[in-house]
Length: 242
Image (cartoon, rainbow, N blue to C red):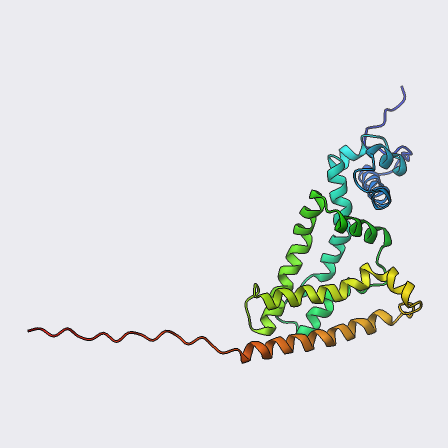
């Protein structure tokens, strides 16, 4: 009697291949196929059947590995953010200098290996955010942004929720992130600007120079603020008895 393929199994099942490795391979194929289709067509316009066909898997594969289409999309969005979070690991450690911490934080934005498909997918979401994207941002970007606020606050001498810290944090992220999101735009305007293998290292060092100047400026401005004087204690006058 011929063997029946399970819904999640790859269509080209290889004899003798360990089941765990086979399932992991099927999962990665789904992620790869979904990344391409979601980036090109968008979430709503891409069907689960299209994804399974592109991955060479049976229709039940998405349900088996991810539960549903939302689960698959969540995993596709999270994949590059998981890599980024790993690269950011420990950047806000108090044992690191400001330059060391920010250098580790900037590293993931200033890599030559930025994946075009993943960038296109996230750009699409920035223009029209989905509920899944909002959840993913809170889960992966939120902790890093809070850690950045703590790092900057420590070196400026203010609370992490101070408006100065929030604005400076978003500004530093924008400067570094633009070399990731706007890379194609930069190459059109200034061909060859990013072609040098050492270009990203020079950009990183210059951004760190600017970041140190900005933090020093905010630290000096905070130190120059007049301190609120403590309210004077009322002196009690003893009552006289007659």
